[in-house]
Length: 359
Ligand SMILES: Cc1cc2nc3c(=O)[nH]c(=O)nc-3n(C[C@H](O)[C@H](O)[C@H](O)COP(=O)(O)OP(=O)(O)OC[C@H]3O[C@@H](n4cnc5c(N)ncnc54)[C@H](O)[C@@H]3O)c2cc1C
Image (cartoon, rainbow, N blue to C red; front, side, top):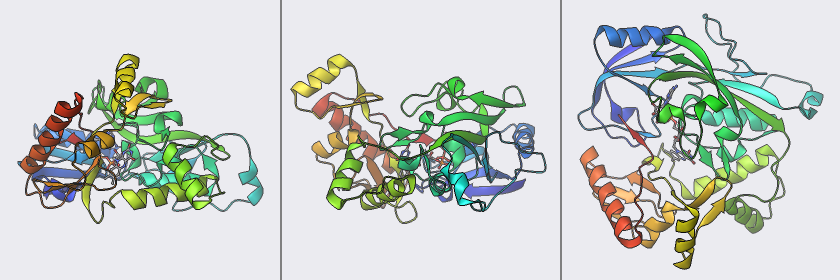
């Protein structure tokens, strides 16, 4: 267990804001998780679980507490975290397998440890011809955070393939398995960011994926890309390639530009609200997960695209993404956020809700 002191939160999060965290503990083995919580308890300090910091924003005053980060690595096939207290069985790359075995039709379970990069999990599945998470390619962050806000993109979300997660329950001081149904997934929500926020430290996630390909109808922007570029490869690796190109064209690379991805959630509507919105010619999307208006569209219509507000740039191609171009503090971000929320409320009557969490 590695303990670091006075680490700026700006260096741990992709929005690059936030003062020092008093302690940061990187856990390398599951049994170090209770040790990390005991350390915080012994100092009477609060804790915060952090992954790659791609959906988390720090405050200027920092965090007088203990940030606990998972450095548990490994991707295992055929279900069950099977970790021993000597640590997870890790595998750096795809195991050598005879070609024939990839031709199987039965679903396959894969377990990824929480400190593994989420995109490495997607790459692993796609290399094996497994469908179910290819549209979630290139979402920054770690596997442990993926179920927290039920990550989603281009028509897929993790609730569609997740079977269970292994956790450390900080309330009962026990290691446990939570099944998909326990997690109560909905749009950008699970119990992990609502009713049981901060209670469970995710050790690993198990997904069930099928050999096969995605099929029509594809999500709107994938469909458009396929038509414009005459794409014919809809294998998991083919769709991963398409999604990666769409994302590279419109979303900032967190290594180059500071952002937390989509800063606001989309606006979900009741049937009555959707009908009223359609009468006003607002584009209502009627998808499998409900009726919604893309908040990026609202922000564009309100004239914010490419504007610099208090050092925060509204991304030109995907207005839902706010980029920290020259903000000096969290206060600058808060001022920009308020300006956008107020104008959308005034122009459209919808109240935008922030997606990233705050330490
Ligand atoms: C450029 C960009 C594009 C993005 N695109 C998308 C997108 O298309 N779809 C989408 O859904 N999101 C997107 N995001 C948001 C982000 O990538 C996801 O929310 C991702 O899951 C965050 O992972 P992380 O490890 O960085 O989480 P963090 O920001 O570190 O943490 C997020 C939350 O998860 C909790 N958490 C983290 N690890 C654990 C753990 N092991 N156990 C328990 N709780 C934990 C934290 O306490 C926090 O509440 C994007 C972000 C960026 C910067």
